[in-house]
Image (cartoon, rainbow, N blue to C red):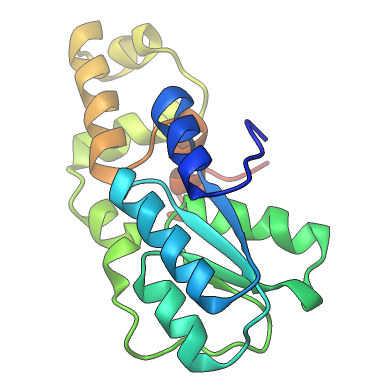
Length: 183
C-alpha cells in the first residue's frame, strides 16, 4: 500500500504526487462509491478503481461500475484473499465482482485490456513477452536485433496502449494472454 487516505480529495493529492497502480475505495453508501470513483476517474482514467461497499443490489453495483470502477466487493463478504485477487484482476483490466453478484448488462466494457491487447503488433507482443521474462532493454534488443532505444520506445508504447504504469502490470498482462507462464 502506498498510502491510506480519508477521502477522494486526499486520494487525488496522492495520485497526482505519487501515482497509483490501483485505488481501493471504501464506500458506506452507493452514492459515496459513485462520487469517489468519478473523482478518481476524472483525475486519471487509467488508474483502476476497486470499490468496497455495502450495496449488493444490481442497480447500485451498475451505477458504481458505470462511474468507472473496475471492481466491486461487498464488505460483508470480503476476505483478505479476495481483496488481493481483486486487485490483481483489475490491474490487468478484468472486471471483478463479489461472488454472487451478477455482471450488470449496461456496464460498458471500455476498460478491459482485451481490446488494447488485440491492437498490439507482433513485434510489441514479442517485446512484451521478453519484458515479462525479466529481460532488460539491452537483452531484448540483442534477442530481436533492435536498438536499445527502439526497445525503450516499444516498452513505453506498451505501457501507454495497455494503460499501465509499471512493468509488473505488463507481466500480468503477458501472463493473462499466455505469452508467459507464472512458473
